[in-house]
Structures are given as structure tokens and as C-alpha cells.
Length: 461
Image (cartoon, rainbow, N blue to C red; front, side, top):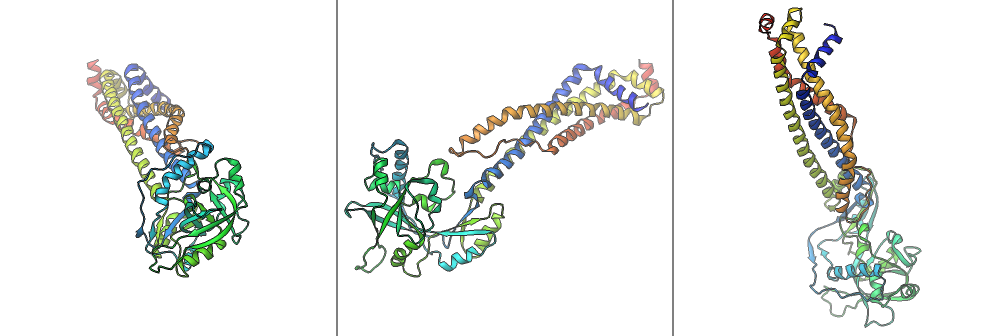
């Protein structure tokens, strides 16, 4: 037989059993569709996690402490008061959240060992670290005219550039040495600013800042004080801006001083050897974040980064994808059983045809190849239909899965455009695997057909 006749015999054998062949095709189609769909979803979700994590600035930041042992820290159970109704509603929501957080802020954790200037210099020499940022943080009392009615909260001293998108009134300090202060809208609220006009009126006024001394046995120690001009008022972060896996120092502070301007206050308060509670490393995007974290920890520091959440999410997706792939493989196995049944029945019904082929010179190998070709055709056609179905379903499934994910992102915008990724090997791999499974399923009926005695077959007919 020439190749055309060979192919024609195989197609003819399948065509004569239209119903059984169609059912086998449906089984292979469903299995191939499930396999391609789950593979594309697994690949797409892993790529989605990479994109969503690595496209955000806070992913490329590492929080560093010299020690994680807390000496103090806690919260009170006092409920937060209501916000004055004259405050605009948008600001009122943020102030309510701020009042709730204040229970912890007025008693911030202090750690057993601070980061010293030499430590910051060491961290800055780690490969791919672009910048080391550190903030002093301490309880503060601040007032404009009356010291008996101060705003209370936390005072931070350090780089303030990240506050630029959140300025409500005024502008940030012109330099790190400027004797200026930035207030949070919460501090402005406690200083009596209710509407936007009162908020803007704070800019330019002189603010008295007092850092109380605690934990010192000397009874005559007085609080550290300084006077600064209010240069700006900034809002608190919105939910979609709270992207850090740990609380940002500037998100928690109420009175913020430029680095150099605040240094004398903190030096007078802590002394020359007192360092920073923590530091933030800003690393080059695309660098090996795990290697940087390992380098930080190798030097004896405690590092916190987004890697734990990142690896955790990827592990979840991998497990889910593995489970989906397993069910898809089971579907293909069930389809293979159906193909075996179809071809075994075909051997019984086509005994005379097989006998004729053997009688005119067809070898056993050709008979085996004929039935294997029929199994391969069922696999190829069914897989092609399954791949088309999977691609079509992914268009609907993409929107559905993205809506589910968006609900878990707390209002943060999605960067990824899809959660399905049909790589070239998904198409070729699914097709090849389906053909392999169906060809193997045809092996037993093919061998059985090859053992048909042509004389007995012709006599039986």
C-alpha cells in the first residue's frame, strides 16, 4: 500500500464507526482542552505574580534592623473619637483610620539594638543597593500657640521626598538643612485645622516641637525642644498606596523633619551612640533580591522583604496548577480507554477487511501501523479541537479570574493584562501528548488485529 491508500484505509475505518469515533473525539477534546487550559492558567498566574510584585517600587525595598528583640511596645484599648463633621469626607475617612492606628503609635516598639551610622555605610556597599534610607522616630508633642493643647503622635526625621504626591498644602522643605517641618493631616486636625482654608493657613506658621525623654533615671532631664516653620501639610496614604509589606515610617509619622534639620534634636535626645531603629534599602529593579537579603543577613542584620509573600504566592499557584493538570491528565486517560474500546470493537467488526488486506500482501507491521494511525488521528483531531476550545474559554475565563484577583488586591490597580499565557510549547506539547496517549491506547487493538489469521478471517466472513 502506498501512503495515500494507507491513510485512506485509516480514515475509512474511523468513518464507518461515526458515533463511536465522535464520542472518542469528544473525550480527547475535553481532555486536551483541560490540559491546555490548566497549563496556560498556571503559566499565566506565575507570570502574573512576577509582574504584579516586581512592577511595584516597594518590592525592591528591604527593611533592615540590627535586632528584632522588642524592649517596649503595645497598645491601649481606648476607642478612637469621631472626626469633626466640618472636615471634608475624603479626609475624614483617613483621619478615622489614623485615630485607630494611634493606639499603637503613642507607644511605638523600641528595639534592643539600633542601627548605627557605620552599619548604614556597610549596608550601602552591598551590590545593587542604590540607596539606604533611615529615619529617627520618637514620640512628639507639637503646638502653635498653646503648649497645653498640643498635637501628639510620632516625630520622624529623615528624607521626605516620598511625600511629594501627597501634599495637600504648601511644599516640601527646599533642602535637608531647612528649619522646616511637614505635618500630617492628622496633626493638622489636632491643631485645629478643619476645612481646607484652615489647613492652608497653617503653612508659614511657627511650630514648637517637643520630644519627651523617657527611660532615663536622671530626674532633672528636660524634653528636647525646637522651633520650625510649617512648610507643608500632607495627607495619609490611601488604601491603594499602602503597598509596603511593613508599615512605612512616613506613613506613621505626624511631624516630619528634614534629615539635617532634625539631627540636632535627635542627637540631643539620644546621644552620639544612639542609632536608627531600622533602615530601608532601595535596590536596583531586576536585581537578585534574594542575594541582597542573604548578604544583609550574612552581616548579622535582620532583613524583611516581600520575598516571603512572593514565594508563598508562587507556591500556591504551582500547587493549584499541578492539581488542575492532574485532573486534565485523568481526563485524557479516560478518553484513551474509550479509544481502546472503539478500536477493539473495530477489530471485531472489520475481521474480513483485515483478512483481505493480509491476503493481498499486507504485513503484520502494516496492520499494526494502520490501527496506530487511526488512534493518532483521533488524538490529533481531538487535541486540535480541544486547543481551540481552551483558547476560546480563556477569553471568558480571563475576565472572570481577573475580577476574582482584583477583589483580593484591596483596590490596588492591576498591571498585568491577562492571567493566561499560551506558550508555543503548550500548543505543541498538548497536541503531542494527546497523540501519544491515543496512539498507545490503540496499541493493544492494533496488535490484536495483526494476529488475525487471513484464512480464518475470510472463512469467518
